[in-house]
Image (cartoon, rainbow, N blue to C red; front, side, top):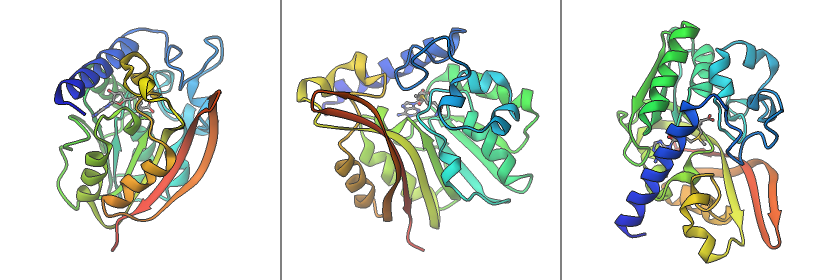
Length: 253
Ligand SMILES: C[S@@+](CC[C@H](N)C(=O)[O-])C[C@H]1O[C@@H](n2cnc3c(N)ncnc32)[C@H](O)[C@@H]1O
């Protein structure tokens, strides 16, 4: 992809999520979230339990834009370090902070300043002290190498114009034996013209790779045991199939 296109995509993604989080409309203008604006909290639709939803500030769950609940697939332990790629308003970081406890740390990375600000407000409201929200890009993570037990992410890597770099960075920051567990969008049979439509890219669609390419990109970064843990159809338009997948991969010990 040309560097001008990368720049345009990143700017559009940043603006889209800054605008979304600045409104009080929660996530309903994003197709990966509640399609019915009248439905309840979007986190319910994305598989979070009532106990999880009620344990963190409502502002974090109402401004959630994910396509799943990645922590439901990760056996995070007390003392672990968790990094959430594209942490948004903080839903998964705040939930991870409860699992890792005082001896662990939950770190969110997001390139949109308005999201980082919202996440920090939510962290303060929750009283969590073992969290850290860092402004930065997931293609060059502001995180020390081999310092992390878990990488999680929720509907973000599909937005990156350089997914391979994201997986290389995830590999770099994970400790040997560390795991990547992500919820993300994949799209099979997407026509070429639709792959570059920025207005659809920002909604997690155009940038979604075919499933086999997504998994290959993770393997090429060095990960092993790359597997799909679950998959649910999101939309089907003629031959185009868009799905939400939960994927796990391990950095060899
Ligand atoms: C669909 S929202 C998901 C937010 C959050 N994970 C959740 O579940 O609510 C995508 C988020 O990823 C961030 N993002 C997108 N591309 C990014 C990149 N290349 N580097 C860092 N953050 C990125 C956006 O700013 C936005 O906050």
